[in-house]
Length: 148
Ligand SMILES: CC(C)(COP(=O)(O)OP(=O)(O)OC[C@H]1O[C@@H](n2cnc3c(N)ncnc32)[C@H](O)[C@@H]1OP(=O)(O)O)[C@@H](O)C(=O)NCCC(=O)NCCS
Image (cartoon, rainbow, N blue to C red; front, side, top):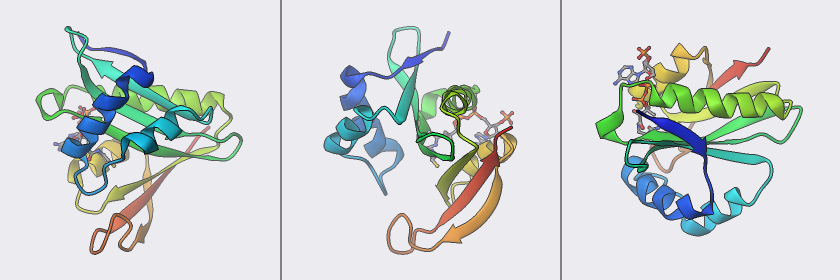
């Protein structure tokens, strides 16, 4: 059974290591994660398998009564297609709602078919394209979900 909990600083090395695997084009460093984890406007959650190993994670920046930004969401290949990303997205969206967020925003690589499908399933719509957002030749699609 997959369980979920808020992330803590002991999880930081796992985030860094999984980032290299899941986001080789834009992994965050340990210093970046340390700073993000220490901010009260950020919230990170993890998914754990039966042996309490982290198999997925997500994070959001929600500064109050304005738009929130999805910072990351990832699931290791062995555990994909089981609804884990959907559950992680629900957890960080609920947290953003409690912070007073009015909408959710995110940037996703234009060729990331699985992630774009995930966001569409959750009701996100395409806003615009940001050229070279993830580096030269790596464009991002900006997506947005209005919160009730
Ligand atoms: C994108 C990602 C997070 C999805 O994780 P997941 O746990 O497999 O997703 P879920 O099982 O929760 O699927 C939720 C929805 O996403 C869509 N989806 C997920 N994988 C898909 C695939 N391979 N093909 C088509 N749609 C897919 C479906 O709409 C699915 O809903 P459904 O099962 O009701 O049809 C995962 O593939 C991943 O970690 N990719 C690498 C990291 C990444 O790119 N993250 C996004 C950064 S913007």
